[in-house]
Amino acid sequence: ARGLKLLKAPYPKGERATVVLDPGLVGLISHEAIGHTVEADFVLSGAITKDKIGQRVASELVTMFDSGPEEVAGGTLLVDDEGVITEKTIIIENGILKSYLHNRETAAKMNAKPTGNARAWEYSVEPIIRMRNTGIEPGESSLEEIIAGIKQGYLLKGAGGGQADANAEFMFQVQEAYRIEDGKVGELLRDVTISGQAFEVLMSVDAVSKDFNWDMGWGHCGKWQPAKVDGGGPYLRCQAIVGGRQK
Image 1 (cartoon, rainbow, N blue to C red):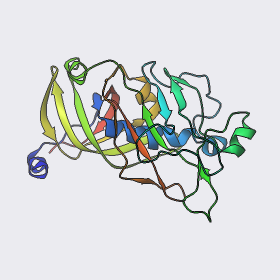
Image 2: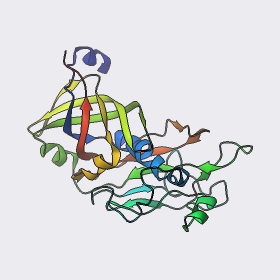
Image 3: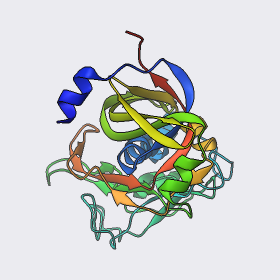
Image 4: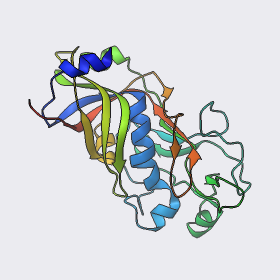
């Protein structure tokens, strides 16, 4: 049914806009566009987060974490492949960058504590730094309140394919996009993408919903070897570039 509706749906115009991201897109951005930039091996190679511990990198409404053993999600581990017991690692706390994700080697180099993120796909390969379940903590708003506060914008649902780089620049396809006008969700749009610099997008967050869902458990992350991971969060209201074209 969605496919038939999409055949008739108009394209959005490309613009920077107010958007509401669903937990799937929040999880994808948390994992692909932010999470990889805080893996300490990438940090040591010069990722955008280098030397940013203690600095503001997001809105004070944003707290991002990599989960410990308590989560029921695709990437949950009790202990990593270097024997470090996992615990919830706060990456960003109220907008301030607090921690990278470490193995024993990077923790020693950077005078930090190992975070239990060394993972190997098989016994015969070297463990490398990988995320577990990466997400953003829920907030205090209802989704209805978040949408009601938007004069013109978009509700974006469902993560598709895309890419992100070491500078946290990303572009992802969106499975469902709806126009928001005067606080009401309107027509379905087609062929929508979202792009931006992930830390700038998180800096613009002005509302976070009470909901929380893990939404990436279907996938493997492919950093040189596969690993089961998950990503998720609440709904976020923020600014990003919505891509499309006019018919």
